[in-house]
Length: 144
Image (cartoon, rainbow, N blue to C red; front, side):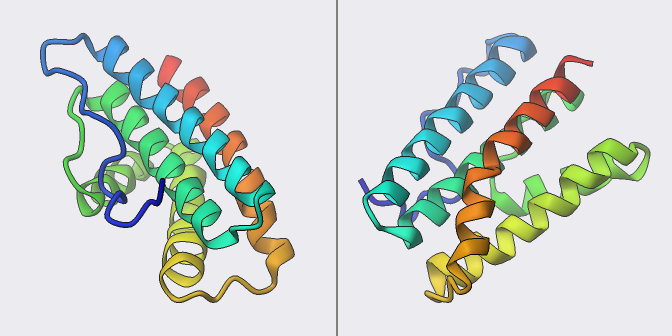
């Protein structure tokens, strides 16, 4: 499965009738599944697809945090970016996540996946592996 065209959504959106907690849980589960897929693609030697899947995992995790904090799920990546930046204004921990989100968006999504600039591969691989840390931090902040 490739990730072309999957940057904005990666799975069926949870029904609007689900509770905030259920929607948050579903988004974070999707983020973990995407990270697992990223690691599998990395093991298969496809760093570009792994980078895009790690980016998608990061975006889904950010969406989960936004749902947990606002009750609303962003429909597109620009809305995720805007809402994450709004949450970061008053919360230093979310600010660090927002900074990380932008790094991953630029390095994994923009440079590596779209442009094919994945060098140095050690950094790209590290960012892919560290996606799980982002998801873990989002889970902690979403529960707070």
